[in-house]
Length: 71
Image 1 (cartoon, helix red, strand yellow):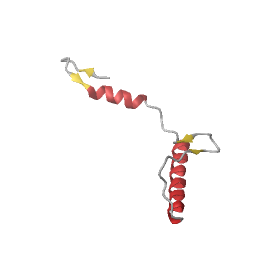
Image 2 (cartoon, one colour):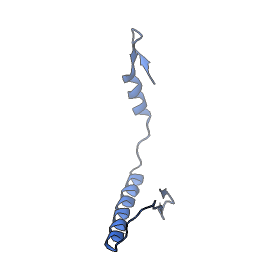
Image 3 (cartoon, rainbow, N blue to C red):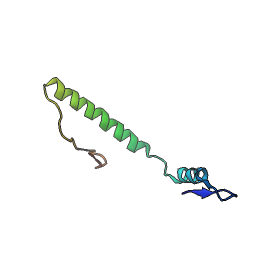
Image 4 (cartoon, one colour):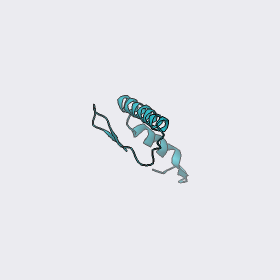
């Protein structure tokens, strides 16, 4: 959203502020789940590396509690 000032020049700052104010607050549980997933994935990759394997494809995880799928 590009707003214009009193002299009709483009003034994008107010538009950016309004967009930021309208953004929903981040869900702390979602962030916590994402962090836990990232730690779990790092542990799994380390285990594979110690066993002499390398992850070459996508690993898909599903959160058992929420059902959210991480790709």
